[in-house]
Image 1 (tube, rainbow, N blue to C red):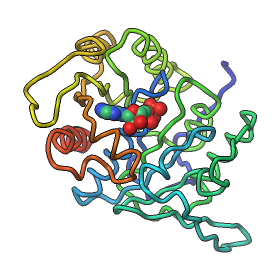
Image 2 (cartoon, rainbow, N blue to C red):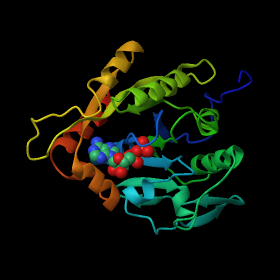
Image 3 (cartoon, rainbow, N blue to C red):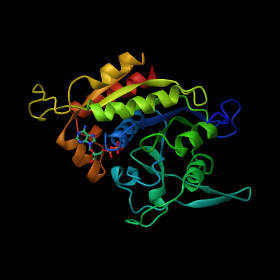
Length: 266
Ligand code: ADP
């Protein structure tokens, strides 16, 4: 809509956060949260101060991916306001709706409720000084995306896609949304996840299950950087489920996310 106003400059929120990076995808299930969590730990390991907001209100997966599903954040009073202390794991400060709702309960909220939750996660959490605050967005284009750009000055967005045609069609929408004048968030680049399958013990054997080079094609088409490709590896899925990021298991995944963290720091 054309009556969207963005509060970019002089935003009173998060003045001590140097970079606010949105992680977005068109389609769900392409590995957006996997990328957000591994990128977060890769940045933290490089010495950066990192926070991660799980903005996927109806499908939060960050608590599981960081093995903090049963944690509940402490709340303190400051100036008559409740301030939430983020959960810290693997050197990353985390906030997710998953910390505030019972496990297995569905969060069925209309847009405004979800949007106000995101505003709280940004404004009412003690983030402190950060080099990076990553925002793991829900798939698609939604109220949440608008709320985010209206609430904080977003440095840039990373688009995650698989090379598959249907994922790329949706990623295109996600990407062009950020380029719309009323959103106007720089697209930092495209990450191609599930770029190929490789058995970990035979990393030179590549099988292009979902097609080849889709992310590269997308980045060329929209003249945005190609930030790298991440193969399908069984340990990435296992790590997500067990809550110990695959980044820590040496090898192909660590390399891929080191590369992504370096690209982001440039
Ligand atoms: P999204 O956030 O886009 O919905 P997720 O990050 O939750 O996607 O990933 C969906 C599923 O795919 C998860 O089970 C995750 O562990 C798995 N997955 C993601 N990327 C990879 C990969 N490169 N290799 C293997 N499994 C992956």
